[in-house]
Image (cartoon, rainbow over all chains, first blue to last red; front, side, top):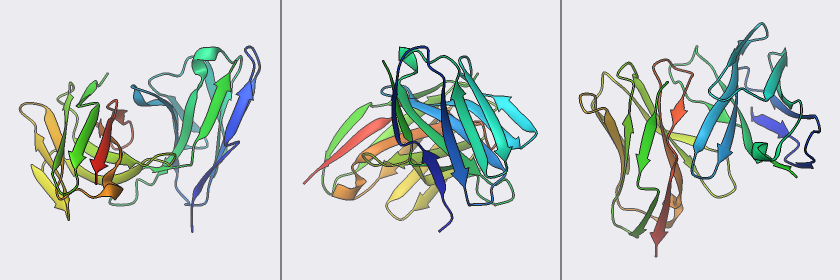
Length: 114
Length: 111
């Protein structure tokens, strides 16, 4: 089945380290998103991309950067990790050509910054 | 930007009873309102959505209602079952991609 995958699934890192979270999809969707989930705050949009050359900041982009290496791959980087970036990170995709605007989420990456 | 408030934060219901979750939004230009369900340890999944030109939408035991004037929308789950236990998120958007999510409601269905 076509899917959205994320690597790693869990990561513990230290303050100040650079870390990259990767997302791949086999759904053939053009749009990709990165969210973070914190207890009591729901899901917040970090970055989104319409295609390889179209990347946009979301609600909380400070401290993060992204790279769209191909239609199927969208990576999120934390240049210098800090403890308040400890969260569950989700990648998602959507296809504007479909009649539904559903976003399909990956399994999530649990990141802990110590 | 859009601000979505969701209530209650937790909801416990007896199996077979109904559950209602309410959300309000701030941007009157919002026109798309999806609901996502996240089971424990799983990824969020869309369960139902509604656009602003529709006042109500139903899919089996779940329904969503929208009041544009009051800027609020609600999720109704009837005849609740144990598998309905999950976290439910509402969201609002004025386009079809930038979703602003509520904080979530943890629903527990008691057997």
